[in-house]
Image 1 (cartoon, rainbow, N blue to C red):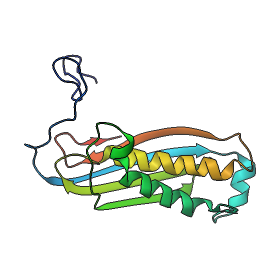
Image 2 (cartoon, rainbow, N blue to C red; image 1 turned 90 degrees about the horizontal axis):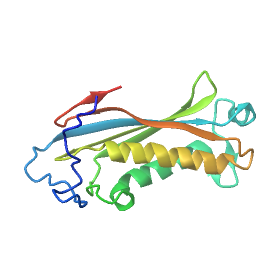
Image 3 (cartoon, helix red, strand yellow; image 1 turned 45 degrees about the horizontal axis):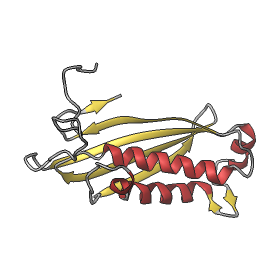
Image 4 (cartoon, rainbow, N blue to C red; image 1 turned 180 degrees about the vertical axis):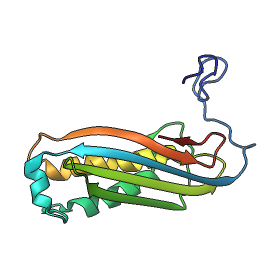
Amino acid sequence: MVDKNKPFSHLDASGNPQMVDVGAKKITLRVAKARSIVVVGDEIIAQFKDKDIQTKKGPVFQTAIIAGTMAAKKTSELIPLCHPLGLDNCKIKIAINPQSEIVIDCVTSLTAKTGVEMEALTGASVAALTVYDMCKAFSHDIVIKETKLIEKTGGKSDFKR
């Protein structure tokens, strides 16, 4: 539920954008998990056959994992008011679910004063975009169905979907 009386943390009293001051926050272990789901269709799924597809650009899943990890590390360069963080860890796992969808999970962690959910979301998103890019030679009928935060811990308010 959204608290309508709570101000946006990235706006000052005049409504101008600002980076959130995390100076007084406690240093804690922060962990976040995000998920993206890519629907590629039966023709592309059939190419995987329980393994990665090798394309001219390289293996799809392995390349997506590397791209997602690189993106998670550069989140503050992509999202304007996001704090620059030195991640302790970023793990991306890719699997095909029973609905023949490609499921990308990105887990990020660090010990710091601010959370890592934007890094997890960015990692999952860019991995999904990479799957799209590498599979479009087979078909453009590809949909990035969703990207969402699954859980986050270690901050003032934990969250679990």
